[in-house]
Amino acid sequence: MFSVTVLSSVQRHYSLLMTQAPVVSIELLLDGPTESAVRTEWEALAAAGLSSLAAHRSATNRPHITLLVGVDLPALDPRSFAGRTAFEVRLGAPLLFGTGDRRVLARGVVPSHDLLSLHRDVHSAIGSAAAEADDGARTAPGAWTPHVTLARRVRTSDLERALGLVGGEIRGTARAVRRWDAATRTVTEIGEFGGSQT
Image (cartoon, rainbow, N blue to C red):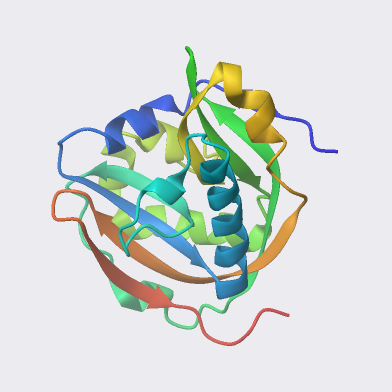
């Protein structure tokens, strides 16, 4: 059975995403079956009357791993991802972010060599703007907690029920990187990984 990790230091990440500032995030996308497995957990939470990302019906709302968040980040050159191949990702134990009577519920992602290498390369490609980003201190290499969000406002009184709806480990594949612009509600595909994960 999974144990649950509670983190308060990542709350700034979610507060930033909910502001009206021109927030940009760089996100890692997953393969279809893994997306479906996460969406199944979103739907289970929603069916139980709990907070869930299933409530966001926009086509841009996809399960993902955030690599960097900031305001007015410069564009990434797609050539930064040329030659990169798909790699395995493992979604593991639940994480709880934040303080107070509402928490963010997420699945932790095992920080593999491939994942950490990609994360480091994204920050390197963005350059000094990554370190200066509003959320830079929490998404920087060495300080980052990779995760896939399930719900953003779960009441503490509902946590036992919510955690009971999170299943076992999910093994999937990292497939692509995109840029999400909160101001325009648009996504830009930056790079898709070649080959297949072995």
